[in-house]
Image (cartoon, rainbow, N blue to C red; front, top):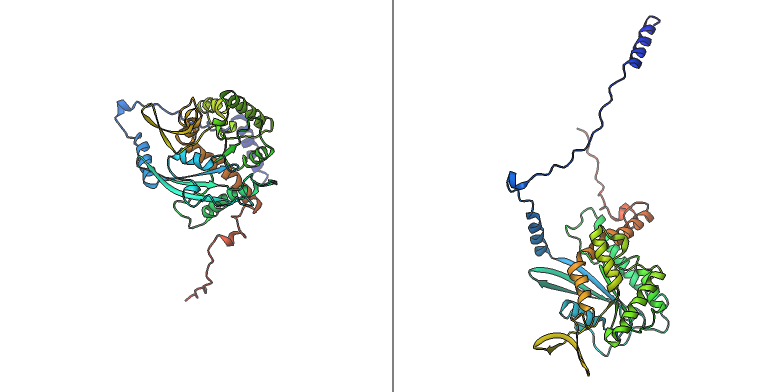
Length: 357
């Protein structure tokens, strides 16, 4: 044992004199730019066409909610947006219906096809909102409905044998109708947007803008923007969700100039200068719905459908739904919603153990 000690010390001394070579840090390779013209055509760009064909086959869901007092033209505006009878009035509403005593939720589904692309549109109306003498907490049924759709999607998502394509009933967009008083927002408006902006994409619109002069409209829009800012109410598109400088520049312009959209809705056509236009007939002329000099309906339509529809769906899924999902799983100890794993996993039948032969 004692003879081995000097050798050990010598080895230790040698190891101190000659340090072990350290492995070189792994440096990630920089992407090399390849000129496709030199190497030949690969076909990567066809992915866009593949996605387009798949979307045309399967279609997509879009669910829009309208909230506001009766008489603000909610149903008419939605019909004008999609140029078809998609509101509840066109299917089951009649003029003899009384205003409901509490807020009700009515959803009407349609399939709209344009250019070979199918959209499964659901319009969610909220009759009774803000129509009572006491409107305390009248937004709670709406918030409950929105969360129920998140819960429904979450339960489908955590199933072991889940569907290949989960039906999406989540509310992607909420149009909140502001009465054209020209003064200021009501406490109900502020309370609703303060509570609901955390769970859904809210787009404020000033209804029946033709009841105000151009000066009144401009002043009212500025006053509404200021009040929302003072009360810390975020509306869509939210600043913190802008992904790059281009998005920020575009959305800043919308937030500072267009919001809230002052709109007029109409599903009636009139002849103006030899052309058929959607409009409202007044004693002093025709108010053209799609004329930017008359109202901002065209800006709202382009914003909701032509430029931000996909983003509305992505923000709903990646922000609002993920926030709800994380909270539900956290409250349930990390388990799927329900009574635990037993509520999601299928029951395993008790089978006798095979005997060894």
